[in-house]
Image 1 (cartoon, rainbow, N blue to C red):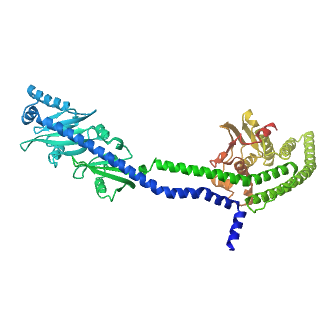
Image 2 (image 1 turned 120 degrees about the vertical axis):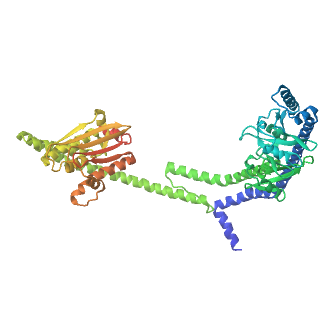
Image 3 (image 1 turned 30 degrees about the vertical axis):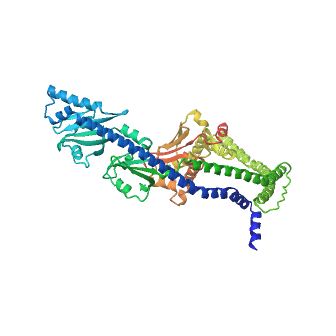
Length: 589
C-alpha cells in the first residue's frame, strides 16, 4: 500500500512521466495489438496466394514448352518424311557441282519454310555424316561437324532428345536453348539436327517470370540444368543439388530465403523450378495496405487526442510564464508563479525567477563598472601630463644642441622624441607601415651613434602599401637582431634593406642586411630560445613578435629566417591585410 502513493506522487511531480503514460495507452498499445492479431493472418494469406499463382504459371510454362517441343518434333518429322531430303542425306554428292548446289539449296529452303514459331523464329540446322551443313540462318552452327562435341552429345543422349544452353552470337550475349535429335534410317544415323530456340522465344514463354523477382530453372529428366534466368547462378553447378535437397518448399541461396514451386512436364518429363524471394511475396499486398490504413487512422486519432490533452495542460501555464516575462521586461518587477505540482514547468518558472535576479545583479555591476571606468579615464588624463614634461625637456635639449651646433645630439633627441610619441600617444595595436618604418629610421639614427658605426636603411615600398596596417613595433626587434648578429665586429658600412609587396591579399615584408650572417644554431636559439644566458634574452623580442603574428592571424601568417652564415641575413614574414578590423583606423592616423 505504501508503494502506490509514491507512484501517484511520481506521476504528479514529473510531467514527462505523464506524457509517456498517455502515449503508451493512446498510441503504442493499439498498434501492438493490431500488429499481433493481423500479422499471422496476412503472412499465411500472402504465402498461399503467391504459391498458388506460381504453380499456375509453372503449368503455363510447361504447356508452352510441351507445345514448342511438339511443334519441333512435328517439323523434324516433316523434314525426315521428305523423300528428297532423305535421299540427299544418304547420297555422297559434291556441293560444288551445280547439281549438288541445287540439292543443298532445296534442303535449306525447306528448313526456312518450317522455321517460324508464331512471331519468333527457330533456327534449324542439319549436319549429315558427310559433314555437309544445311541451316536456315544459324551461322554459328556452320562451325560444327558431324563428330563435334555438341553432335556427339546429341547422338549419345537418352532417350534421344538433347537440350543444352549456349551462346549463339558472342560470349556475353543472351543464351539460347538448343534442341538436338538424330535422324536415323534402319538403325544408321544419317544426320544430326539442331534446333536453336531464340532468347526472345524463351522470354515470351517465361512471361512475367523473366525478371529479377523470380528465379526460374528448367532441368532435363536427368535433373541436369538446361536453362535458367538467374544468370548470376550459372557458374554454380551445385544449384540443382540445392533444389533437389530442399526441405519442403523453402530454399536458401546466397543467404536469401526463397519459396520453391516445382512441377514436371507430362510430355517431355522436363522439370521446372521457380524460386520466389520472401521479400517479394510480402510486398504491396492488399492486407498490408489495409493494415497500414488502420494503423494510420489509429495513430491520427490518438495524435489528435494527445494534442488536445497536452494543449489544455500546457497552454495556460505557458501563457502565464510568457506574461510574467513580458511584465519583467517592461516594468522590472519580479515574476510571481503559482504551481500546484512540482513538475518541469515549475522548474522552468523557478529558473526564470533565478534569471531575473541574476539580470538585476548584472545591471548593478554594469553601473558600478561604468562609474569605475569614468574614474580611470580621469586618472589617465592626469597621467598624460607627465609625458608632456618629457617632451618639453627633449625639445629644450634639441634647441640647445641646435644653437650650439651639436648635430648628433640634435638628431638623437629628435629621433627619440618621435619614437616616444608613437609609443605613448598611439594606444592602438596597429599603425600604418609608414609609421612603423619611420619608427625604425629613428631607432637606427640612435643606434648608429651608440655603436659608432655607419648604418643606413634602404626601403623599397610602393606608396599605396605605406598606408596598410601593421602590428605596432612589430619590425623593430628584427632590426635590432640585424645589428646584434649581422653587424657585430663588422668593419664595413652596414646597410639594412626593407622590401614590401602585396600578393593575393597577403602583405609580404622582407628585411635583409649585408652583415656577416647568422649560423644555423644561432637561428635555432633565436626561434626556440634554447640558450638561457642573460645575453640571449634579447631574442625574446623576436619570439614575442612571432607569437603576436600567430595570435592575430593564426595559420594565415608566415615567418622565416635565412642566412648563409657569412654574408647576409634575411627575415621574411607575411600576413593577410584584410583580416584586421582596425586596418582602416590605422591608415587614417
